[in-house]
Every structure is written in structure tokens, then in C-alpha cells.
Length: 408
Ligand SMILES: Cc1ncc(COP(=O)(O)O)c(C=O)c1O
Image 1 (cartoon, protein in one colour):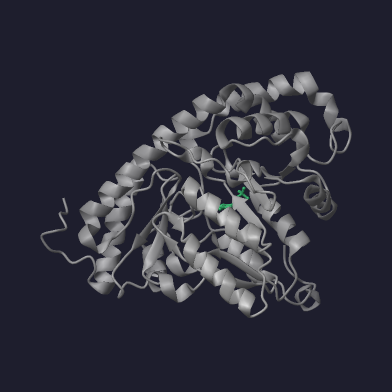
Image 2 (cartoon, helix red, strand yellow):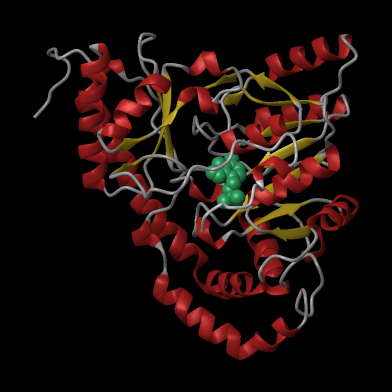
């Protein structure tokens, strides 16, 4: 459609940069938080759709079906059960608000808690979407120090005290404690307890974003912070994007009624009922099997990526091997500027997320990048990493073509 009418001059002030036109996915698609196409349970979803429409199809005749603005009742029943079993929570269906993706839950939390000029603390490397949302509101974003175990709680305590000395109380601390994005760290139970205590003592709410918590390969799962003692100041956020499918646009928030009531007032409409009904029906019977299968596939991809990086980059790529999730956060020598190299990589068909975009202080992560290994096939991972090494070598001399980099 041609833009004969000048809408642009009438646009509101302060809008984000307009989206570029969609030009398709690159051949080696390592960006975003997409899922594994082979893991989408298409047949199961078809059966669930037919079953649930026969059983409850008439409920879509009214806004919010027959169960009010918190979301489909079977969806909330499924969530309450899963959160109790796997995250240790004792949330009821009345404590859960279903949202159109967890991104909407974050928007609503920001709507009810933030004003321009407020301060928020988030992990120094963090989910770009959450950071951009805050900056778009004129919020002062500060980074909390991370190490291999997640937030360095002692450093956070000192940071909070230093802010307090200047009369600043952050509006909240936003954290991704279980399989952090992008570093994949998992915060220990001890650190969770300490984080809860220092924030609670200082009257600072915690937004706990657990959208990857279903995707730990194995071992003990630390409970959600909202399941722990002294967690009245926590709002919990989760998603179906990472363990089922992002295009479904389904997420949720768990919080006391006073918080949910205000979020609903800002939400201005329900989340599509059909998706909720189908997903709840499917997952009620298939959650364990589905997630177990997905984890096997993701772990195989993670292993292939680690192997390909070691083979093609040798010691030039430093990373922790992920214990779950869909990302690998990689550090290169300082002369590798991943932001500058992204265009060259794209010319070779490789898309990755440059470190500065995932960093509160963009400069600190110029030599980092994030790879999402969920979407490409194992072959694409192998080929894509080899090609990426070629691009980086041609542009920077890194990785060197020496004995410690064996290229077949
Ligand atoms: C930590 C984190 N939170 C929230 C989201 C948003 O997910 P969605 O809106 O698809 O639920 C993402 C997406 O990548 C994420 O990484």
C-alpha cells in the first residue's frame, strides 16, 4: 500500500525506531529466542484443539469465556499444578494472570510500578527486551554484577546501600534466576534466600522472570524465589514460548490480587482464549513427555554447538557449557567487536546477537555474543559456526589458524 497520506508527521513524539520490513530468516539463524521446529507437537495440538472445542467451545461466546479476566480457568489450573510440582509454589488459580506472552506481563508490571526517572536494577547482562522496555520509559537502568553463579548478592547489597546513601530506592530488581539469559547461570538456593532478604529489608520488589526454568537438563531444580520464605515482595513471570512455542504468545504472572487487579486494569482485554484452551488441554496430559523430549533435542544441539566452537575457535572462544536453556554466551579476545562484525556475518548468512545489545553497559560486552541454538538444525549449527570462524578470521585474524584450532 502506498503512503500517499502523510501519517508520519502526525505520529506521537517519543516512539521507538520503526521496524524494518521483514526479509526472512537468515540461513544460520542464531538470533532471538526461537524454538526447535521439530519439537512442536503438531499432532498433539491438533487433537487437543478438536477435543477442547467439542468440550468447551461454546465458552468463547463471551469475552473472557465464563471465567473472568485472569484467563482461561483450565489454563490457570494447569499452571497452578505445574508451579506447585516443579517450582515449589503454592499459587492458586486466583494468583495467576495469563498474558499474551510474558513480554506483556513485563509491560504490565512496568505500567503499574514505573514512572520516568525511576531506577531499576537488572543483571549486567540481561534480556534485551526487558532492558529496552525500561529505557523506553525513561527509567535509569543499573547493572548488577554477575558471576558464574548468577547475581553476586554481596555486590548487589553494596550497590543498594550506595544508592540508598544518595536517596535512591530502586523500583525493583529484575532477575532471571533460573537459566539466565544470556549467561545460562542458575542462582543457588542460598543466593536466592540472600537476594530475597536484602531486597525485602530495603523495601525493593523483585521481578523473577523464569521463562527458561522448565529447560534445565537435569539435576536439582532450585525452587522459584516466590516459593521461598520472605517472598511477599516477589512477582513471578513465566512463559510458554521457550518450552512450547513462542508464536502462541502465551505467558503469565503470579502475584497477589492487589497487583493482578491493577495489571488487569492496564491490560485492556483478555488473551486469546483458543490458544489457552488448546495448550492447557495438551499440556495437562503431555507436559512431562513433551518437555523431556524437547530437552533431549536441545541438549544435543547445545553439545553440537560446544563441539563446533571448540573445533573452529579453539581458545579464542570462552564460554560456560549451559546446563539448560537455549543460549550460549561467548567471550572473544578484546579485538573482536561483535557489533561491527554482525553485518559481515549476516552477509555470510549468519545472524547472532551482539553482546552490547544484551548488556546494561554496552561497552562491557563488545567482545561477547549470544547464540541461540534451539532453532537451527545440528548441521546448520556445525556449518554456521565454521562459517562464523571464517568471517571473524578474515576480519580480525581471530581465531588464528594455528595448531590449537583443528579445521577439517
Ligand atoms: C528472559 C525473558 N523474558 C521474557 C521473554 C519474552 O518471552 P515471551 O513474550 O515470548 O513470553 C523472553 C524472550 O526471549 C526472555 O528471554
